[in-house]
Image (cartoon, rainbow, N blue to C red; front, side, top):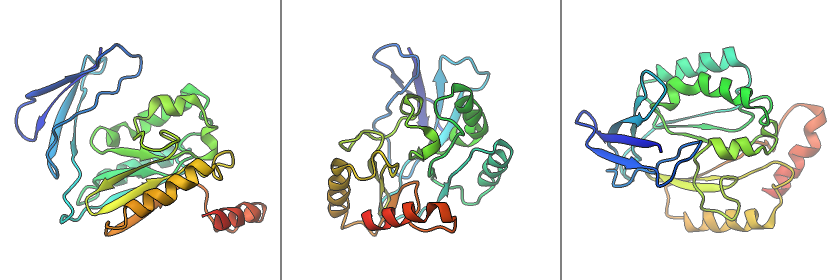
Length: 226
């Protein structure tokens, strides 16, 4: 079974959380965290020489923060270069959001292996959120590999979260699910519930605007729908 030792930086790793049952892909929720606080952690057991990292918890509504948005990270050399640039940012972003098309083919495990090798130096220290692009092919691997909020009728496909004074909403804009009434109703309700937030930001993969002639129709459909 997987476990995580953690504690507020720079103190001791004085807290432990362990999975209730053995799993192939591990997911361990950490509770009791203090807002706007840096924590460090170590994963146990681990086949890696260094299985430690750190992260910041979400700030209070009065605190400012920065975050990074990127997408279409299918080119490994370029992706690694961007990861390196993000790691140099000051102040460091509190989280990263990937708008989809993370890999060339989401049904292929080697594609995901390469993706996580590229992103590991960043993801060990920064929460990493995502949404589905068309290149993920709606593959089960995506849902297995990403630990995302499950607070919509389409778990992990749509979700929302608060970060400081901002409310973030994520939807699946792929053709199969973009006009699913359950998602659209939830989207409207979620944004309504978040009216008190200073900002409301919606993330999805497919743009309502673009210059490629073959995609004009799809852009128009996205604009009409959303």
